[in-house]
Amino acid sequence: MNKHIKLGMIASLVCLQSIQGVTDEEVIAFVNGEQTANTQHAPSSVGLEGSSTAFFILNYDSELVEGLFRLIESEKHSNHWKQAFIRLRIIATADPGIVGLNRVIDKALAIENMDMDSEEKLAVLSSAYGTVARFPDGKALSFLKQRVEPSFWEGRELETKVFYDHAPHLNTTHDGITESVMAIAEMGNDQAKKLLSQLSKDKKYEEMPNVQRSFKAAKYYHESAELLIAGIENAYAKRLELRGASTPEGIVTEPALEIPADPPAPEAVQVVEEVSPSESAIEEPAEVAPVEVAEETSEQSSQWWLWLVGLLVVVGGLALVVRRKS
Image (spheres, rainbow, N blue to C red):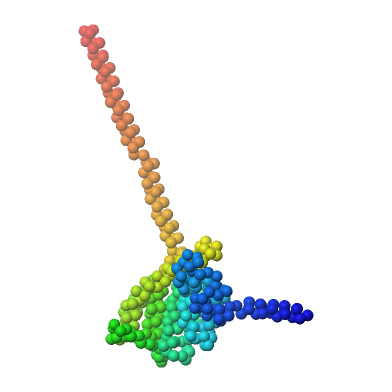
């Protein structure tokens, strides 16, 4: 009987673990880039550089993603929030579907409304906004655009100053606006670029030197983000290879907005339609066969001269006969 009770308890524990998924400790280990029972691949073992980015892409799964959101929901793990968002941002770059834009926005909204240290809050929101930027979606852009408006931050003291020894006189204040600008810059698609161009010319930002600096830095920030994306794509391709997949399933490189799948098709059809008439136009003159007409004319001319020569020969012969008789 005791044996059956023990087996029942073991079965219950196994079921409980399967329901709970990974533990917070295992998720934190993943956040820190540490090998656990849930992580199968080290980047160096599969021919990749030993970067933390490659580690996260090779080893994430739905349970670890759920665990990252669970950390963000737990105040006792607030010291891991920034890093948890950064991990979600990396994963969303390759596999946005497993992360989900709505969930990221919900967590960002919750943190915006929390009562916490201004500097810590800004650091977390900076990572959260960067995660939102990994979704080439109109909703993501609208969310970030709203936070570039000075009116959004009225009554919310959220800023931190960064001082550089080589240029202490520069205004390098970071706030909700500057972090939103940099997140939009990270999106990099045409809509984001157009929005930044319009915002940079808006007079309401003329008296905000720190925001002006963000607009100027946006281009270079996107270039650095592209390098990050390239590394993620490389690691994601290796992930698919290890899992026997032949084609990427979720890479977001400039996003779906930058490379639409449908527009090229009509263009290809148009090109074909344009070529077809020109080909038929070329074929039509061939049917007229101008060369053959010329040859026929030439043959007719040659026959006329032959008849003339023959006639002259006959006339000449008759003349000789008449002359001899005379």
